[in-house]
Image 1 (cartoon, rainbow, N blue to C red):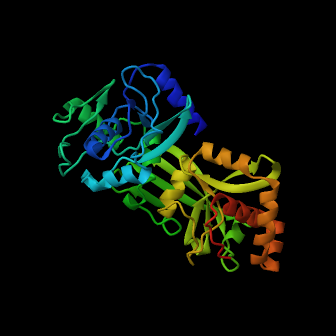
Image 2: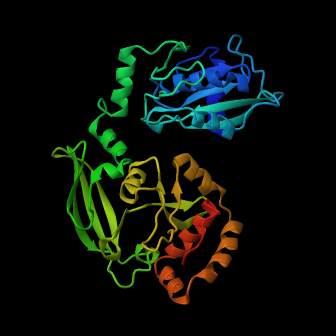
Image 3: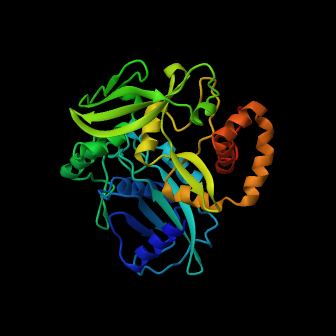
Length: 369
């Protein structure tokens, strides 16, 4: 939030609007819902690489901060999301938004942040008031496509090329293709190869490496099958793009990328495993799991925290206190059998530590041990 506040203050100081930010004097009222949808479509389809911002409570003529604190009818985030859900978006691809409230110069400024996702072009298939179906709107500089017009064809073509990754380098395309696990022909553990069914030039080769007897074994309580470490290599045609170590459990029915390791700010000896959604390992996790939740074959959620990005991970690491650790250590220990605690201790306490961190990161986590 601190970084967003800094960004917004810098944009206001520019005293102009641009291709990824737009100022509004007031929050959107019910009679301005079509303006909201039009503005969202224009910004979401902007050629800018990065998130976009609708900044409410700033005059778009003088760039004076007026604030929205006196507006009793302003919407909450669910109100804005509800409007977008009412619209008939092509393929159900809707812009993803987050509403932030910032205190700037004694005023409350609201920011509707539009996430930069590879789903352009966004457009409607059903008319929404004056917002026309099958019209693709965008934003160039500080100008939106008029509500009764459509973007130039060359701009629309660039949007489609971005969605399909045509102009991207193969490594960036691979990272995005990881988020389409259903479009891959894969059977890791049984077959030693796989490929994307629409872009078969993206393919992988897998091989089993060696037995794995460290703490990962006890996340699965796997006493019958011997877990292994494997290697998976991804290629573009025959060019190696990326290689990863993966963990194979439960007779090769379960496989995961080797997670990253970090430690707490207040205790550098408190190491724990984690994944991060926005990096390659996080995308590979989604490729292997079809979701950002790690479960065993009994649907038990495993205690490995999954962070959205590096900023959230670092914020979490800084926030954990010794009191938190003591509190959760005493309450969680009772769930572990003496035998499992012994195994956890033999593995530098990884099982217990990760479970504690999972509780702290996601308080609704239900222990299934």
